[in-house]
Length: 343
Image 1 (cartoon, rainbow, N blue to C red):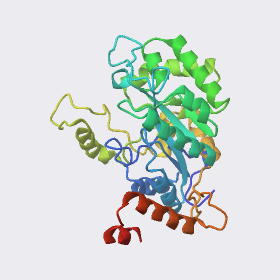
Image 2: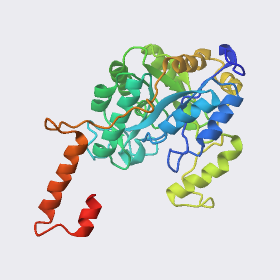
Image 3: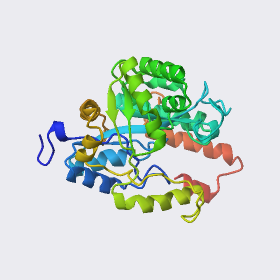
């Protein structure tokens, strides 16, 4: 066990974290997050920004400075319909606050890369979600999950997930069907029942049903804290950030807000105490951290190679292609400035 780290029975790994790259949503600076994680003796930390993976390389790179293992993940948006290209809003209930997020446009889905291939699959799905599935948010669908699910670990997600939304609406059978489908996509042991508790009514209403689901379908439990900032005192700054996102002010009683101020980096002791009745949910954060090992290759030449005629190199053929292009564009003679620019 590295110096400063806690025994496994007392430790914990945060697997649901929104960094500064979770735009206008996360207020946790990567350096501050790693420094606090190391200070608390935790061995690993995940990044699960909303929708995009822009921060994962910096996250992976900076982890080395602090001796904390990086876990590459994503809180993805998933279409509630059948296809990511479908822009139809979906309602599973009466359209109230308990119904599908984004006015029926998307649900949330937690993913972690177990392998480097899994991380590359996350990149592929993230690109497709942006290019093909964007409807308020970059959305994946089951087709993408089934195609690129190899090397990934997933969970039942947060209150905005498909599973929790179904449970909140009293649709236990539909929740079971969704869980069974996701478990089949990712494989036995790669789909977890995610437990979080910030003292919110929306979370506690479904907790018994979540635990029932886990028992009925033999899902392993994993505890998380939906982290959006590093320390408790950062809650107000985060509230301001949400005001910027929603175009409101702190004085607006109807502004978009989090109904608790504990979305920070809880200590292992706090998490162990919170989930003392389900210690395996904390133990599994360490097991997942051990399983996840994705990395970037630095210094490699990843430029594409192009076929060229015999006797030519890419450089010599490129010069000839440019010359042909000049003559196509300037049939009456190549201006000096165009020739200089080409050179």
